[in-house]
Image (cartoon, rainbow over all chains, first blue to last red; front, side, top):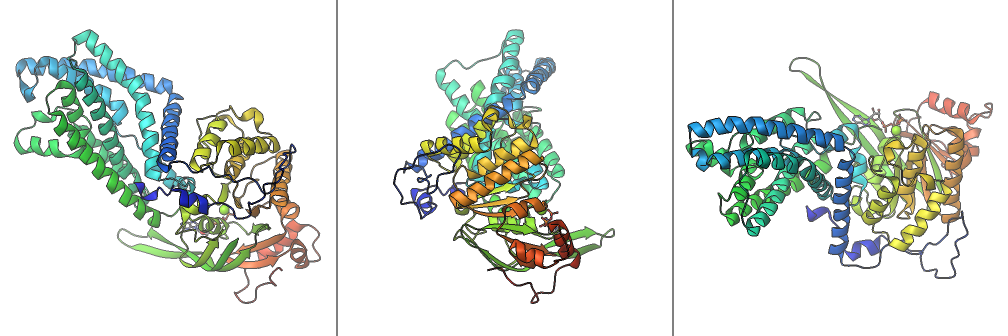
Length: 312
Length: 267
Ligand SMILES: Nc1ncnc2c1ncn2[C@@H]1O[C@H](COP(=O)(O)OP(=O)(O)OP(=O)(O)O)[C@@H](O)[C@H]1O
Ligand SMILES: [Mg+2]
C-alpha cells in the first residue's frame, strides 16, 4: 500500500514552481493576488511524520463524518442489544443441553454472544462497503484518483475513524446491557485487555481489507451487489458471528478457523475469553491483514489501469 | 504548459444483443487531437455535448490514459505521473466535488493542506486571499451538504487553488451559477490569470465565459479539433452573425471538418 505514497522531500521539491526566487518586499494589498508567491511547499520535515499526520487527520475526519449520523448509530446499538438478549437466551438453552460445547461454558457462550453483537458495528459484519463501488459507478472516483495519496491508505484511515466511532456507540452499550442482565466474563488482567484491543484493531483491518476487495470488484463488474452479497454470507458464517466456529466438527472447524473471516469475530472473542494463545491469535490476524491489504494494493494498481472514469 | 500530440481515446462498449450474442462497439471519444497551451494563457475549450471535452480533461489530469498519442502537462506525462502532477495542477469538475460532504468547509481545506503539504503560514495567507476574493468567509463553518451549488462551487475552486498550482483545469465551473455568482467567478478567474499568471483551460457551454475570459478558443467536435484561434478569429468564421452563440452554433452544426482542413491555428 505504500507503493502509491511518494512523499519524500525529493518529490516535493520537484513540484516547486521554478520562478520563485523573488524575496523582495511582498505586501499583501487586500483583494489582490500576490505574484510570485513564496514557496507553498512545506519545509522539509520527516516524511514519515507528515504522512502520519495526514492519515491521522483523515481518520479523525472519518470519525467526525460518522458522528453526523448519530441517530443511525444509536438505532444500531439498540438493535444489536435487543438481538444480543434474544440470542443469549437461545445460547443458554443450547449450552444447558450440551454443556462444554465448543469448549465454552454457559457464561463464556453468553459473553461470546454479546461480543459478536459488539463487533457488528466496527467490523461491519453485515456488509457495508466503503462507498468506492458507488463512486466508481457514478464517476466520483475521478476525484479520488486526482488526490496525491494512496487510495487504499486513505480509505483505511477513514474506516478506522468510522470503526472507532461505531465502537463507542455500538459496541459499548450492548456489552454493558449484557453484563447487567447476564453477568459476562471479563478479562482479569490488563495484559489481556491490551491484547484484546490489538486483536480488535487487527480484526477491523482484516474487515477493511476484505470490504476493499469487494468494493474494487466494481471496476470489473460495474454492479457489485452480487459480490457484496456473497461476501456478506461468507462473513456472517465464517467469522463466527452466527455460531462459534469451534462448534463445527473436524476439518470444517479447522478450515473455517484458518480463513480470514475468523480474524474478525472468533479470534478476537477468544482473546477476550482467554481461550487462545495471544501470540498465535495476533500472528494469525496480522497475517491475514497483511495478505488482504497486499492483495488490495495489487488490485488497486490493476484497477487504475483498467478503470474507466464514468460520466462527463 | 499543456502539450497534446495526436491523442486518441476509444471506449469499447459491450452490449448484450441476444441471449448469448454480445455486440462490441468502439466509440472514438477523441481522435487525433493536437494542441498546445502556453504558460499564462487562458484558453476556452468548446464543443457540443459528447464532443470529447471531459474525456480530454480526464486525460490531461491523468485519471484516464490515452489510447494513442502523447500528452505533457506541466512537464509530466499525466497517466504515468498522476501523483506528481496532482501537486502541480488544480482541477475542478463542475458536477463533482472534492469537498467532504459532512464536514465544515474549513475542514476540507485543512485536509487539503495536509494532502498537498502546504506549509501552515502559506496556507493561512492563501486561504484568506481566496475566501475574501470568493466571499466565502461566512461559510467556512458550514457543512458542505448545506451549501448551495454556487457556494459549493466557490469552495471547490478554493480547494483546487490552495496548493498554488501553475495550471488550473476547469470542466464547466459556471454550471448552474446565477448571474451574480457567475460574474464574481469570472472576475476571480480573470484576476487569477492576469495577476498570478496561472494558466487556465476552461470548458463551458456558456459563451459569456468564453467572451469575457478567453484569449483563445479551441473547438472540438466528434473528438476532433474543429477550430482554434482568438475570439475575433472565431467571429470571423461567420461574420454575418452578431452573437457569439450563433457563431458557435454554426460551427457546431457544420460538424468537424476532416482532419487536415482544420481552421488556421491561432498564434
Ligand atoms: N466511460 C465511457 N464509456 C463509453 N463511452 C464514453 C465514456 N465516457 C465518454 N464516452 C463517450 O465519449 C464521447 C465524449 O464524451 P465526453 O464526456 O468527453 O463529452 P463532453 O464533450 O464532455 O460532453 P458534454 O458537453 O456533454 O459534457 C461521448 O460520445 C460519450 O458517449
Ligand atoms: Mg463534459
